[in-house]
Image (cartoon, protein in one colour):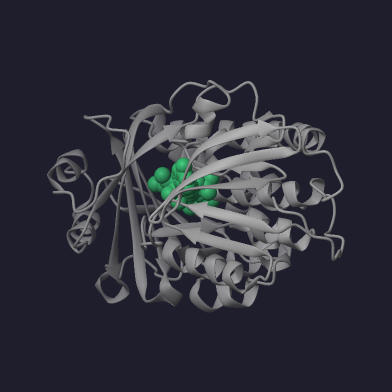
Length: 390
Ligand SMILES: Cc1cc2nc3c(=O)[nH]c(=O)nc-3n(C[C@H](O)[C@H](O)[C@H](O)COP(=O)(O)OP(=O)(O)OC[C@H]3O[C@@H](n4cnc5c(N)ncnc54)[C@H](O)[C@@H]3O)c2cc1C
């Protein structure tokens, strides 16, 4: 949807096909770092986002065994001072509905829910897509095809002959609790990051501070590839049985747990082929340990909007897009992987990590990700009245 909003600004008419019948509030919360917010602000969505999001004052890091504070990484005013923008946390359902309303209000975007793209063909003047909808199969012709179809991307396989997603051996347990049920030891105005052996947890507020999003990453036994809703929390209780009681009591407040396998996109040589391109998780799904997967998808969308013009050749625009994005995305994915290793360390390495984190000022710990948050795109949109279907 971000890509559609960017392309519409650039003079395209865009059809968005989404196979889900509606956007259910799946997956609880999401962290929106300043690099992503810069783009959403440029699209005029900033006010709406700030109305429902919260801006944590910092990330308070705890150890899981004692629930003792290790360090605070400042965000809040510090993020605004360093990056010019806040670091937000938001419910995914809220982010989806803000993007969907913006698409619905844009004259040049048609958002088709409950429609699955089942085939794409390239021809001399662009592409044709075959779409399965409740009214049967329809064909749509267009200038180019952008596959933003997530980590299980069909087009990564169909067009790029790439491997299936790779399971990291970890899964995320996610749920929500009302803010009044959060143990008073944890500050709802901050993000809490809990580091445990082979596991970690994160809490932060969503829904304008009324609800707390809980995410616990543990080793996965089943290695299933799809998310599951309303899961019995026994495996989570077993994996975190040694965590401090105060933390375990917090988890007990969650009424509905869902589990998400933590997958990566695996190796992919090309993201573009003629007038077709992959963006977001379809191209580069990464581990969520830097909270950057959606931010990278949003950055992709903006860069694509800058490079693809109605009078440009999509093949060469996509080549430039991939050349611009690949290095940064790979560096972010690498950092996410390293974060996972740091978060999940066992004793005695965890003791050394904790001492190191206590000695290094929190503002310096922020530097590890400052190069991500401080990113700005290389251009702005040109105003144009020309339209072309994309
Ligand atoms: C536990 C966890 C926590 C995370 N936390 C963060 C975070 O805090 N911050 C952050 O930036 N990122 C985070 N991420 C990563 C983020 O969720 C993803 O990177 C992001 O959702 C990718 O967006 P996308 O649009 O590329 O793909 P998706 O969000 O997967 O969207 C793909 C869409 O395509 C649709 N679709 C698929 N196939 C078809 C088809 N053939 N036709 C039509 N529609 C189709 C699907 O229904 C879906 O709606 C997290 C991920 C996980 C697993």
